[in-house]
Image (spheres, rainbow, N blue to C red):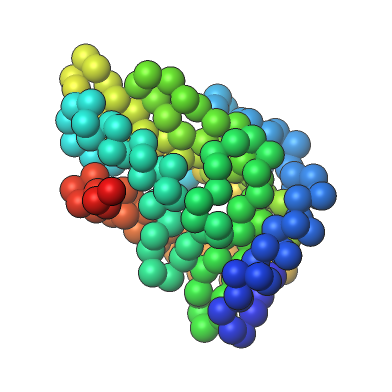
Length: 192
């Protein structure tokens, strides 16, 4: 959905409710956990967040709060959406002077002692078709904590096909800014 004004929380809730009844726009649901399917552009961003269990726990809490979307130009609605398969999120981004509202459903979640995250997949009112995984990992052998994004996508909306170079630039910008947001989140976590 493309808008000329920022959508209200009520409009985003109605958008999510309508999209919740619809199916994923791709067949390989869950493929970011293994091998992305052929025919899609695959992106991977992996950044070091720090060391130790405290950093891992802080990064985990940041994902629960959707901090990776705290970008200024992009956000997730609602920001307190539980990371449960089936939950629908509205991803809102201001790009090229308009507001893009994209629907995604959580496809799977990961909650292990050294790995935490989730993947969401696109729904019909999304400019792309594909899946994106957000994961924090604590490598106990090196004590290093990583933030990892894996995505596969292809244009779905006519404007994303027409402006594919701009779409790719926006995807790279999102990955870079999301990594920076997670770094900020582990350096300056919110106070309770």
